[in-house]
Image 1 (cartoon, rainbow, N blue to C red):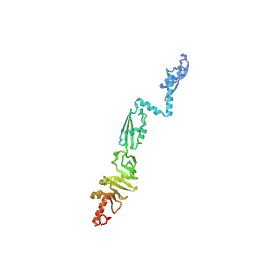
Image 2: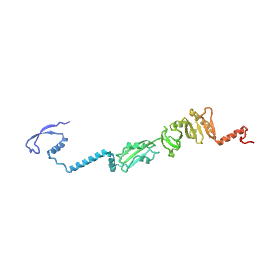
Image 3: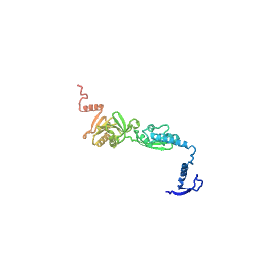
Image 4: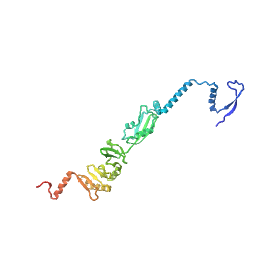
Length: 308
């Protein structure tokens, strides 16, 4: 706060010290110089500095240009160009955390030009564009002035390979599809087959894992009619499991195989769906040998179609 005080002012530049009085105002110190300049301008005694007109004209054109850029939405473009050419051009991009995603794919999402300015780069947009890639769970983007960009990636965790028709896809444990299966690095993942299998695979694979000697031999987990599971072993045998009591059936077949090498006896399928029996389907050659052996024990001719 300050007070303006009216005081008598003696004389003037034109009064020549005649003693004529006029009323003046005492201004604070920081307003005195602008007030004197204004008084001189109104009295006709002010002489503008040299090149003032040129400076005002340049300022007018600059203001017009800035207004046009803002109105046309080109401000960020101009700013990026200017800052890029004055030492802030993006020249170093460091990508980390990527295993399934190539750096080329990441760089392709940045829409870079030869003079991309680090100052004008929108990190939120860059992060969003990178997270659109199929394997990317999240990305952290950080500017490192004057010319570097750090990109740290967290990728999705693959759980299984899902076969649907002739197509193969890598899926997460929650059943979400990540990407088509193309990389042999994922060949060791469990293979699940059937409609609806990805959403239910994690629970079933976990159940089979309780029997390590059996799970080590599984080559595929097959969901049948969205109701029950079969497992296909590495020797081609298919074990058909019941809709209910799955874990009990797995325990039974694992015990039989442990004690009798049951699953290595020339069969193609083992049906565990009946509560009171196990149904076995033998290979054709094994079935022929078994039939011949049975007829021999019963005293029947080996070739019943031939008359002697």
